[in-house]
Length: 197
Image 1: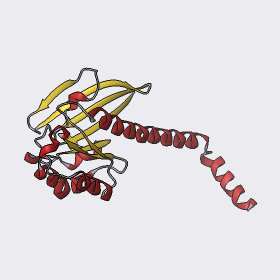
Image 2: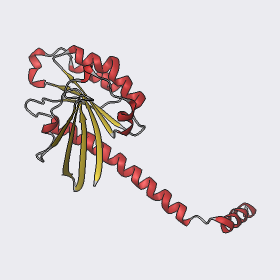
Image 3: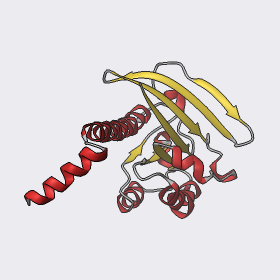
Image 4: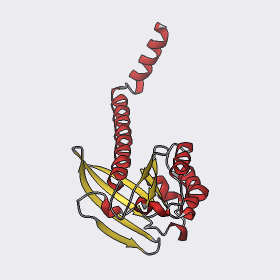
């Protein structure tokens, strides 16, 4: 089983992720919903832990420790609310880049495409911003569920690939250390290899 920790900044409708049931825990001291879910993705068992601001991101700031343990960050804005986009472009993007761990994956999501007639953030504006910061960009509707599954699947897949790469690297290091001679024999081998050169 692979465990993935995600932070959702903004309101995306985490319940739309899969058909499997969610386990909710509200943490009032942090203003966060902790959502847990287990599901199968391409034959791999995934345990997803989502720290969801549920659209209350303007009322609090996440500490560095949350970003450092997150495998992925989903930054969500409302396409019908320019202020929500500005909060990401003026504040959250800097926090995510400065505080996230090196291999953390991030995506940008424009929510409420069901309200296209009230759009305040143009698609090209959001796309240019996402390209500037190398963020995959999705437009979704948490209300209808359109695109939500695809966005979660994408970042889950990216996080899974990074975690598997990390695990493989650790296993290779362990094998190398087990096969490497130690003590006196290791010193002899090192001296002999230098002498042969």
